[in-house]
Image (cartoon, rainbow, N blue to C red):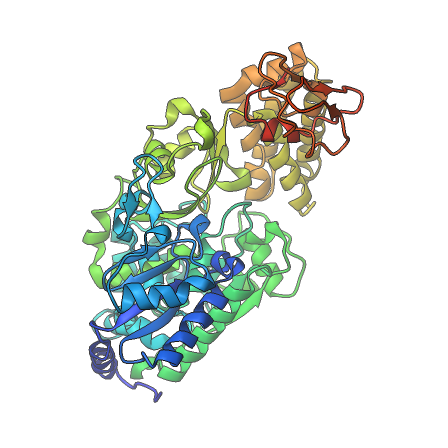
Length: 617
């Protein structure tokens, strides 16, 4: 590819690229995100390509390896375009049959269709699957249209047109003003208005100015940023280039956590291809504007998601935060003006430039505009990535998109905002999801982790788990976080072991507030949130652990006993085999016996019993 020298030359090139896409040609779009690759997607891709070669079907169809489609538990998934036929849990052996029956003869293979668990209806079109119906996929939608390793796919589907528009029709300040008017708030957790941050960097004294993409996504269960970089890295690059032009920056970094090798590979390819086409590097599209991006891989520290710790890591120092009275927009990376936004924030920028601030403002609530991508995980029927408009309710996400709680269990809570977020109970399921409303409930938007819990979840144990995670990830620089979080965890350990004291709840609240107020960075400042929110909404569980020495959810091993119900036990022997200590004995069709001295309260018998014969006290 030759370098394009002007915005108009790019637009002409884009038009030809779009026209070259044959709308009549059948495309088998196969999800090749990390999740589906783990299911064996690469073998499936190879199988389709071998069949195409064997049957000489190049003029009839093509295979496209795409980014994540979102409905991760149904992988490997394929979408047959343009008919939008959706097949899930597809195996290598299915490839020849799909080609023969569906592509060549228009026949639907029913066993590969998604079956709605509520109606038992077999769904043919992807847009009719309940998981997708309420989503508004402005960012994730491109994942299904392009191969992330082929820039022509992105260009042919409208990619980089926002950059051409910004360089030819807009002034740098006009770009910033458009983002301010759109009210794009940072998707990394804090929700600070991106446009105002950009404006501060532009006006700051100092050179060079740096533009950074934070892809150090460390929240347990979260993988939104990974999936964007794996499936559509060009959207992030385009957003960064536009932002850099507005702010007057010539240097960019993408800071990616070490555990994201596919995201790094696809982003490196995208950067090389953008340079080759003249969209990155020197004199971009003949505008006189220079900007280049390099990738920096993190070392696996959760604290490096914090801005100043991230800067230190890029500079080659230990990832330790600094005091917040020094603003990154004035003195960030190498003590120069720096703009740091996360992956999803940058991916929103081309949409705003192309469609305008007024269009963007039409989505969402008064102070939270646009869509938000969540990683929907936990005790939920439909797990995966969902992109929804700001203002959707938690109930809609959990029950309409997520399909409700498995096995008919009762919903208990949902945690938003990752390990530093809060747990929101059932009475607030109809609260609209936006930055401000979640904060009022003692939680936060965070980067987009959303973990659903059922009635078998112990909220004290959940608080302990996330407190231990944050204790391990603390950099240790400041006393409130280093020692305070540790002491909170010790108290939670005691409570879960049945050794809690009546004053422990008040102590946890007092310590939590002190840690939040006194910590140096946001990790310590938000670390008490899981504890404070669970005390706020589930105080009765704490009291049961302390006063009654009972775990109502039947989770804390020191406080529970497994028993066999004589009336319900059928003697099926299902519980005997999974018991790791051989604590259960009994003959077939005879009442089984559980030896309490051997029982280690692992719960394996409880999980496999089909007759409610294992009870927890």
